[in-house]
Length: 360
Ligand SMILES: [Fe+2]
Ligand SMILES: [Fe+2]
Image (cartoon, rainbow, N blue to C red; front, side, top):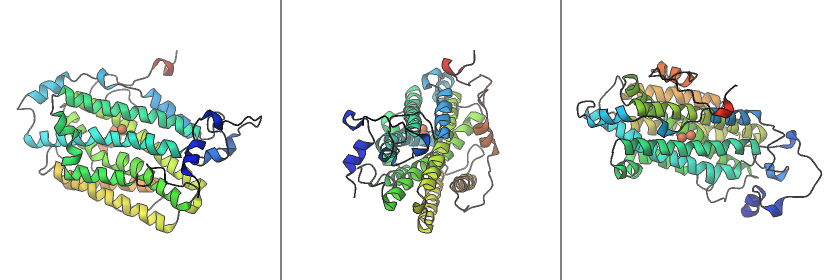
């Protein structure tokens, strides 16, 4: 058994761990995990995993800040008792309550779990970017809730008071068992499987499934020109999240390629069971959010959608589809695929590029 503290030290930049040598790092020697056992962990270049570097560049090119988005119309609409029915107000508050803390859970898992165990410099470069984006997402929900003068205590505590949100967050947090406390040993098959389960729990389930009925329901308001500032921010978050999920899936598949002993039939079945459980929790959440249909949405449609996206995630992990449902919201694909020339709901140009990414 390895000493986990020593293992963590090998992965960090403690001065005493830098070895004097004229041996240069070759890209081929790099690994996604257990990299520090073979090569220096502080050299981004030579880059082996070009996909990770490109995800980093894409994330930077999409940079945005919540406070750039006007909340004026949202504030007017939210204050007007006639703009929303009680059911509509309920669903908006549930989604804001869920996201306001779920984004923090994801950020914490990156910094406290994933960053320690993925010691490849290209991936860490992206993880640093992603961690900042999660901070921006937390900021976005804080900004929306504050702008609308909502009860902050009610919204930020919802994950401990509402059963359906609590169960989703509990599912995510159960994937940190044995990972957060650094007791996991990535030299063993069991340890590697535990870590892959963590990555699936966050990148595929939390960011790839749990977030999506929230995106659909909130963006449905945007399609009716309601809550435009909130929906513009959610659109940017969705754009970020689809990169997070794609990075995560590439990372998971890459780790499996490099450690094929982990990919047993039992482990594949286990992951399928977990994803099916997540779909069930998400449908329960939809039922609670939508006791009656609103905005052309109802529980059967959301169930179909959640099953459809779960199948897509399973396929990307090279696991068999389970549901064979159709996509009841084809417009969601347009929002995701839109190349950001314009806000989906407005005419304002919202492609955000920083100076460094512009062509002169
Ligand atoms: Fe996020
Ligand atoms: Fe994310």
